[in-house]
Image 1: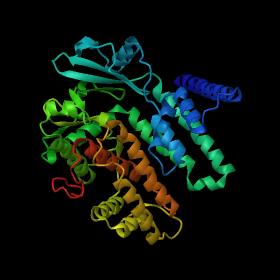
Image 2 (image 1 turned 180 degrees about the horizontal axis):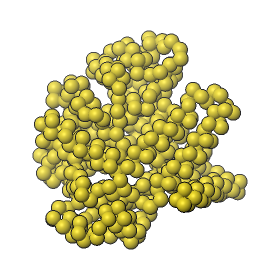
Image 3 (image 1 turned 90 degrees about the horizontal axis):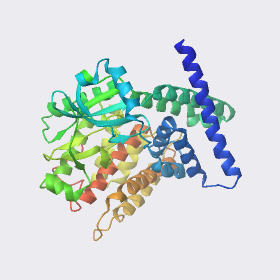
Length: 423
């Protein structure tokens, strides 16, 4: 019976998808003609969870998609109207299997945040701890599976009709998206990521950084109850001074913690934008939201490490050699020409943020993505095709570079002995 119900829901979802796309086509025919990348982004937002996540994948995957689309999808909003608490309360009851007043002393019916996959509410356990509850929205997983199966079949058809697309492997991209999205829907995996990272902090005797504690007795595959953090985003310089006397030291703690995770943890946090790095009221750095993590093979990390070392000493030939080992190519790479192009980009980056001008926090995302696009573009101009993990890794490095400009403009990232980039 459930199979039949899911099939009906799937058919209805495909019908809804066709309707949204058709409506966009009608608006286009009637003269509402924004640029194609913006039209696609707006259509994705109207289609909901799967396509919003797909848009975010596009935004972080310049190796696969044209620059205009990567830039436009930076604006893809994963913010959706909140569902009534009555709906979320039913999911809590269903998942926990017992009256809520046996678990929580109180739950704020107004959400702290509402995204495409989940909604977050503040609460207090009956044992007195302040927590946040991440609750998966109803029907999300079925919608994701239906949409992704539809996209996979469509990609296979396109690859058959246009064999040249097989190099970009559209169906492979959809499979990668499906893997990451379904992981985000499994809060047990996110809870496990939090536990692993907490263990990594304990093993490395790092008491200056932390992650939320998971309360297992009230967490399931669709509900995640975590310690509530109080603090401010990493880039809120004025507020940070109230919690940490030395913003520069706080930034160094965040960077060293993340760098250490590359070699001493099973994964690295793959989304260190300012909203996911907090300075807590006790001065510690809080890493939150472990729904997106990255894993990098030792061989790829060695090449990335060599790339960083080359950047530190300004050796563009070594940078080009490392990039040629990171990327996948069907042809020989002219590393001399690649080195020359990297040198030009390096000179542009060096003059991007003049020392005499204050750096604004809202510039960070734009600059990060522009530099990332330029580096990837140079590689692709020389026949290199980079794995997505490299783009994710590089993006986090660039985020930290921007935070240096905000919090510690006098610091030299590659020369400061307090930073352990490669250890």
